Structures are given as structure tokens and as C-alpha cells.
Image (cartoon, rainbow, N blue to C red; front, side, top):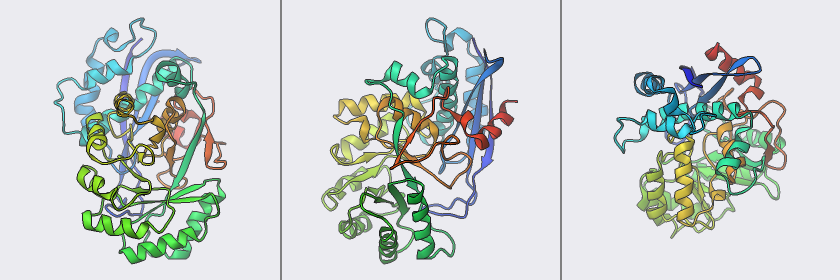
Length: 388
């Protein structure tokens, strides 16, 4: 059993949308195929992965450092002890050879993307959905294929008025979502509050709005928003300041007693641990959004979950960023609190397998081997082109 090849291709996911910090007009991502010599149904097993939106494609890093290390390693050094399957932990260690600690930015995205493809291949070799494989090997409870999801949208569009914003949010509610999210910080406080009021006007009992500043605010602005947002019953107030400004995050608990969320731009277990140590996050109400595809992959995410448990946090307080099926499988297999979802954006990489519908804010994962990419026809068509 061995990895025959690892291929990467960069794809555009450009869009005219913007949040408080960046626009997506030139956004790209990397799609990766890990090709093995294992045969299932007459074909080689291929694992696929891609990085989440908001970080660009990482093909050059992969081709220069990480892919050659894996392909040059001995077969047995990348397998489980009984040689029955790939060992993603050993492959991860191989990729990290000659890498100094720290400096997690782009490197963590490149490794996380390859790692996703490795787990997809591993579960396919085991002939199981990844969420069931994870529950059996790493979980504390049986897998639960029913996962909470929320609709991420509410970006700033050129020329968008409040009626169009309301129409967008209605469309999510009509598709079964109970929680929707919109951006803040891309306009002044007054306009953002008017946009919030517009969205709340279309929500019914039991439906909630989350807001996301994408790290835009300094402390004074974050506090001003916290005070203004306190009048609402929001699902959460997300990433008000720079992701590494733990002092700012900790200070906000004095001004915003309701749920907050952050963590999507922390790319290692160590940075996640510093957030827990110094960021003032509250395990009884706040939410953690670490995204395995951006933070060295599931191997590192497992370390992060162990760290959280040691600090008294439940995995159910994790609702990852990224809107991809990898995190859906982790949520179903390891008991996370849910997952972000992009009903319309970043297609075909966002969304669910064909036929999966949102019902009362939840989706139920189908019993597809691996991550389940083969069940999403538009995405799988791209993937097949990379592995042919």
C-alpha cells in the first residue's frame, strides 16, 4: 500500500462580495488529489481535499516542500503498524520534517489541505464514511450523522440595498436554516445596526442572527459595537478584533455578556491554547471556530480538541469555519456543535452532497465512503479532472 502521487490545482472562487477586511474578487483555493495504489470497485482509491475560503491557494508551497517529502518517504513509514491503512499522523509528521515551530500562516493551509485528502483516502480504504471512522477510532460516543448548520452570508455587495439583504436572508430561512449570519464592520455602526434590524425583521420565533466583524475593530470600536449589539438577542458576536489580540477579546467580556465567537484565523493548537488561556472565552456560552483545513488539518485539530478537554471545554462548543464537508464529518464523528454553511457562495466547494436538505437547522450526512465528495456531482466533476 502506498501513495502513488499527490496533485494540486488552483481554482478561482472569485466573487464581488466583501467583508469588513477583504474582498473576494481575486480569491483562489487549492484542490488536492492523493492517489493510492489501493483498488476499490476496480479503481484506485483517491482522496480529495481543498482549503477554505479566505486564504488563497497554496500550490507552490505544496509542490516545493510538502508533496516531495511524502512521495520520497518509504511506504512503510506512512502506514499503520499493521500496514492495513495509511496513517495520517505519520504522513503529517513526514510533511512537517525540517519545519521550525511557529509561523503558522500559509504553511498551515498547505498542510491542512493535503491532510484533508489523506483522511478522505484513509476512510475510503476502510470503506466507511469518515465520520464513522473518526467515531470508532477517536470518539467518546457513537457517530451522530445529524449536524447543526448555519447559513453564512450577509456580505457587502456593490449596490445592495436592505430589501435585497432581506431577500437573501429569507432564502436561507426558506431552505430550512434556523440561524443566519451577516457581516458587520464594513459600514459605520449606524448603518450596520440598520442592516441588523432589516435582517431581524424577517426572522421568526426560534430563528437567530449571528454577526461577524472579521477582525476589523480596535478595542474602542469593538466596545462600541458590543454595547450597541447588547440590545439584541444575537446567536453570537464574532471575531471583533485581530485574532491574536487576546487582550481585546478578554476585555470584551466586561461589555458583552452574551455569546461571542472566534478562532477561525488561529492556525495551530498552540494559538488555540493561548486563546483559551488569555482570551477570556467562556466555556458556558462562547463558541470556537477553528478550521482544520486552515490549521494543519485534522491531525492538529485532534490535538486542539485534547487541549480543550484539558481546559474544561466541550467539543460541542466548536462550530468550525469554512463550510466544507470535512468539518461536517468531524462534527458528526467527534461531537462538535455544528458547522458553518455557504448555501450560495464559493460553489461548487460549499454545500452538501446532492439531495441533502437542511431541516430545522440540521442536515443528516449520507452514508458515503470518505468525506462524501462523490455525492456532490458538480464538485466531484472537478475532482475527477484532477485525478484522471
